[in-house]
Length: 395
Image 1 (cartoon, rainbow, N blue to C red):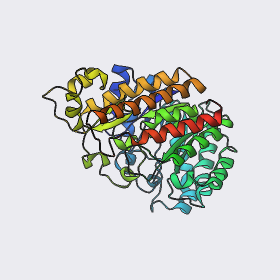
Image 2 (image 1 turned 45 degrees about the horizontal axis):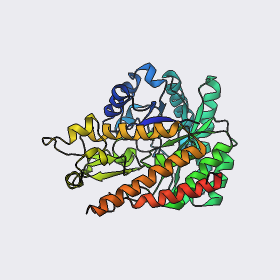
Image 3 (image 1 turned 120 degrees about the horizontal axis):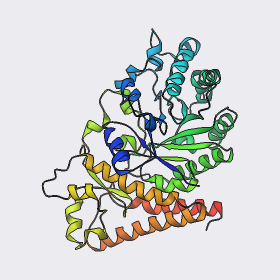
Image 4 (image 1 turned 180 degrees about the vertical axis):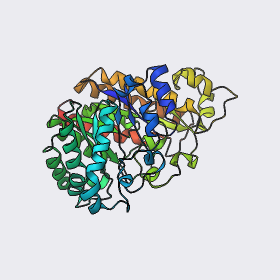
């Protein structure tokens, strides 16, 4: 079964729009109101909105940072005395739900999203709070609207939740009892590494997706980095690509502060599809010295050509870095989308194995990477892919 590729929109979202329109990268958008005002969303092209999802981003309902303040249905904006769980559930939840559902229907988005509140750890009130604050009032408004647009429930699973089998089982029992068509799933890791290196975390995501798919629920995977390639094995319906790191790994910081986390100023990185990794730009010159034909190691396209010009000044805010990434990751994902089951596993396994071989080749040439640019995630990913393939009878 094939899957779609959506752009997770954030800061400088114009790059994503350009990537879709000019380069044909991706099938739709996940629109984030933290970064885009209501009026700007309403001005998006109708055809684009029909293939896009609006994520209400009620993650921290008491902090309407940046453009979230332009949406009158954001929880904090519907109260006079400030967001409080009990008071909101009693008085403002229906108002918030009505406004948010109406907005999604009027804009004719691809799916209607029931939002979620982010809770740390394995909070015992998780199900009750989600049910009272969002699920009940949203489903009531959706039924009243008589819309035919499919409904997604947004869920955020942190690593503690994912690794707690009984906790996950309770949530699954609850989710599968609801009148919804799918789940917009976000997984949050506490790791600060550039790529996920926790096999148990990844295997737990696979288990969760399988359980949801067994109940005929559509699966949208949000805030993905290169692990989208690995997670494609679970046969999701939509995977995402993003520009800045906070669009490729879920973080609460942008919703806690007006300061955009992208403004911290990380060193610029180049996505290298043959390595399945973003490498720090300082390595590029050394790598080029070891290859007479750069196509043997680098991806070549119009953005790469511009970045490799002597006059180019590397900076993390340069759009070429991200448009190059969109081109290459989309190419990889589209190839995987053409096949399924064992064939997709074979393709993913081969992709990871080639990347490991390329890293070995670079090592023999004297290139030694730091832990955020190396291939230390690849052996873990290959192990996870193999174990999942064993469960499915593909290996």
